[in-house]
Image (cartoon, rainbow, N blue to C red; front, side):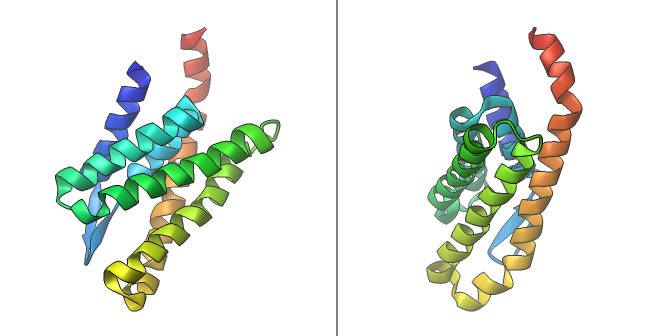
Length: 158
């Protein structure tokens, strides 16, 4: 439970404090902590930590229209990643990477679709490159952090 609370906090901090504002939202580093959450906690707890941390960042940051979409989309991303990483490809060496990239397709698609009614097609399409960069950066940073700490964590937890 302590690690889950820590991951909610890290997702929140990565989203709330390490952000670059844009016209209708912001780009942030919270996605890397969401990926790390899945790697450390598994699918269900990772989805909870990612959704709650990101949702709280939107709520406290004044982006209230994004709270429910963010929590839903982040949870779906993690659930897809977890299903692929821990069920379909659990024996594959790159299961976390593959799961995260396939989940990212859902993440990017769902955020783009929710932007259509909120801001219009032009904005939704024009925001795709930045959203894609944020998502891919989160996957790379999160998986790299996990790769660096997993051996030390296994030693500590044994």
